[in-house]
Image (tube, rainbow, N blue to C red):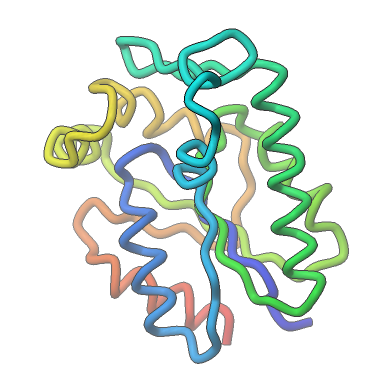
Length: 177
């Protein structure tokens, strides 16, 4: 079965966004990408920092409420529908719920050929990238570096600590065939 979906899971500032751009360059077919950051940016402003929405704590912690979860479920199903309609899709996510986060995608992507990729990065390197980005709550990268991988199963793992995104993308592309 031909891979229809690539799911990248890694903590904040682990290098997923750069990896996505490189994947889109090295893969022979067009692969649109959908990331959790874009989903969060698309939310109404009133859902950010509010009960029911998404809250970013000063220490980098993230919490979500019922309204966020409902919209996230619809977003997940929508991306799966695109893959079922014939699009090859890259998903850039942060599995804050560990295995439960993976299970929500497994349910939505049931019947599709999925490549599960763990994107690892040393927490100190991710924290430095976080500072350089300037668009994240400090502490988020360090808090998520290991947490998002606990209990998650992968077909392949890449480490962006010392390996460039393009090389990681080529490794993933070679795994697809």
